[in-house]
Length: 297
Image: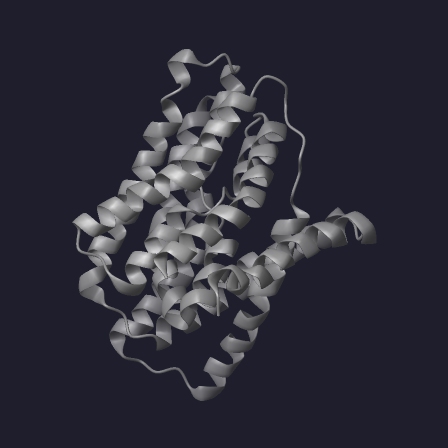
């Protein structure tokens, strides 16, 4: 199937989520519950099941992680590049900065699953599980003076990290889950993709603070265009190939995560501008991710 049409169902689910929120008026409590269900139950089940039953190339895992960390580091540096010349208020800059390197796990798993199946989910899970603590600490560090508490607690409670550890441990140990357990986790995982993407669409917000458009545009270009180039270059230099290479490039091309908005609000930052960058990068990624996927295939 042509790559353009292959990703169309996933992007359609995002747009469906935006339409449902606009027209059905289900309320904030409903969407908050959906996000918690996906984040704490459904996606961990998907990840554990994929890691436990997929043969992993452990030799390639080291360059895979090295490439992903190099990409995150490049995002951090590129996010700081405009700072000496920017007229964006300091609080807005600190809030939006994280959008240069944070990633939407929901879209990541959906695209990896659609293009590469369980092997893609497992590879994406390895990258995301290792990257989550790094991007959270970097994001908090930029906003730390605004009174964040419990950053390590948030990281230790992150279900993707624990799901990665559990799934990886099952894989390496050779312990086989009983067939009913695989089916149970599989059923939960099947529900995760659709609900996760619908939740992404429901979170879209197109309205930012005045005077941040230039910086916002730079962050979107960094996240969707420049970082995939970095990942492709570093991955090639480190000898990555096949699914691992494709997954790390797609990881680099993911739009910004909605958790960036949550962190900005919790720390008294400019949540409105962050929400705009998240939404704009998500919509733009419908084009850029499709192009990157087509290039990889």
